[in-house]
Image (tube, rainbow, N blue to C red; front, side, top):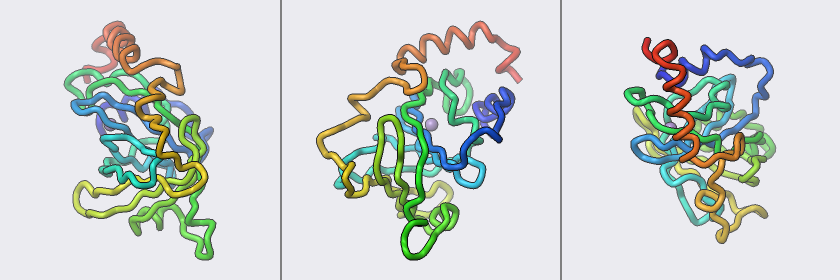
Length: 198
Ligand code: MN
């Protein structure tokens, strides 16, 4: 487990209170800015790092690199992962909400975990910024499987809107990434070695 996961589980929010169909997208200013797209599946957050973030244009295929599962409680994390730790940098809760598994609604009912193993996930997101169908398609297996995140062609597709650049504040706190970075570094200084140096 990397540091941010440890930190989250130590803070110990109650996992039982969480819904099992939650999604979150965290904007993460690590060495390279990216968006972490996470879906709660069977008690963990399946996670993908999406360098360009989601698009509402079905013609866009956004690279989504599968990364380690995160604990459900990590969906609430916003702050700064200190220097020297994996993923060091500011993290914003860019969007969150619930999702529906669209593949469970067709003629053949396919669970999220089957969809994941098959490499074709189709979900309807009900977020604060994103609403509509999104597909994740795996196109390369391996240690870090690569997927494409694609807006499905439905009533909520919109090639003119670009929320990644126009809606750049936290849905949790209304802060920009810069503000989170500033305030988070301050918090980390106050928290000091007790929290992070072990
Ligand atoms: Mn990340």
